[in-house]
Length: 629
Image (cartoon, rainbow, N blue to C red; front, side, top):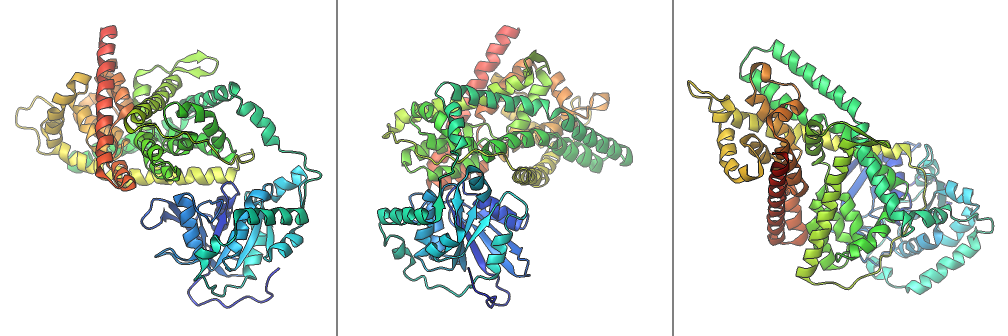
């Protein structure tokens, strides 16, 4: 199954291995198993498609570089993701090193679909081997695969892997140590991709399967039986709504203890600094500016991690593609298809990857509408704002049947974002014209238990992203805001706190003329400005502003009781409505410009979202005043 001697390796240049496979074959899990934390994530040059590269050392002490290519069903590309994979494999992508060898990762339970890509890559003449992944699942189902016969038929080494188990990659590492890496001629690589008809390739796949596999003892696919309930036209949507409701209940219920721990730690540091440092600018910067701002955001890390825990669990177990099918009919009613579900779901993390994911939508009109409504999904940056206001104004009351009032309000806010996105999509459909309805075709992966290692790695990466933003963007803006809020100082005989007379205070009072009709005071207006860089910055800005606005015994270490005393309920509800539609951060608008190749759509997005936010806040504020007196 390979050479008996290790090939020579150019000094200082580790062989580059490309992992290639269909979506849902376990390719990324195998990449994580090989590289662990030794990986670098970026985008391919000129496009916003994720590029993962890492390194590892084999048991024989040999260094390798490994590239995780975007999932593809064929090298005859129909989406930008598949085009990237085709060009990298063929060695024709400018600025991208051609891989020295290809590891084709296939799902052992679905070889009929996976082997087509393997045969296409084989025609390129590149050194390659086959990683037969999920062999444990195939064995449990009673599927028999003769690996030696499969290697003989394919003319390449075949190894068995279980990417989700510790040690499940060892056979692959041994095979790589024996693999030759002589440079392969690729001058006619692209022409070789389309040299054989799809029908001939599929006929060859069936012949190989007949020779190498047996399904005589196959117990059947449990996933299909589960889908009879999960994809039921009545029970399916009810189950989806119940799952989403559970997620938002848990965001408040489970996060209470760790949030109190973080809040207590921030408060203790603030008290220590206050007692250690003399009164002056340095103490004000550290306690009021940095701790008052950054600490106000940091406390929401547990809620963000709990939200992503559920998203990762649903993704890892195979449920999310089913949700796309469930929502296909609903989204079709507003001019979209279920294809838009994954980009919109990605937008719950951040609108930027959601907008990038819309590249996989082939219809240009559907892609544009998906980009325009993606920011209406409630991204994780809104969660600190929601959590702050809900904790201050909504009682932590148990309504029975494990329903918490705060979690119910959060669920309603998320639902409002989804409903508004569907409404805006319907309007765009009328403006841009209806496109032909396309049937949704998507592979449904088999159900399986989520894997703890993948969950922990995903949560660790999310925590790193959040903490990096806290330590860079938010920290920088809080220092800048403190400076603008502290200078110039209060004039002699001043009756207001010094921040009132500062540059930030002047700006806040100027903006208050515009926002007063929706109940926003000058302090809130100050926080909205740095919030344009990142939404969660608004919470840190409020922490800094109110820390500098309070004096003596009125200064609270926690922002929640401060705003509970300073705002009316009508103002709080108005700000919640504002953040359902809040105008986008500058980073999102720049991505929209790049993805649409036009500044026009970025301006349209900013304009329509500002208008929706203002109208929604105005109606909410005036209605609340009318009923609350």
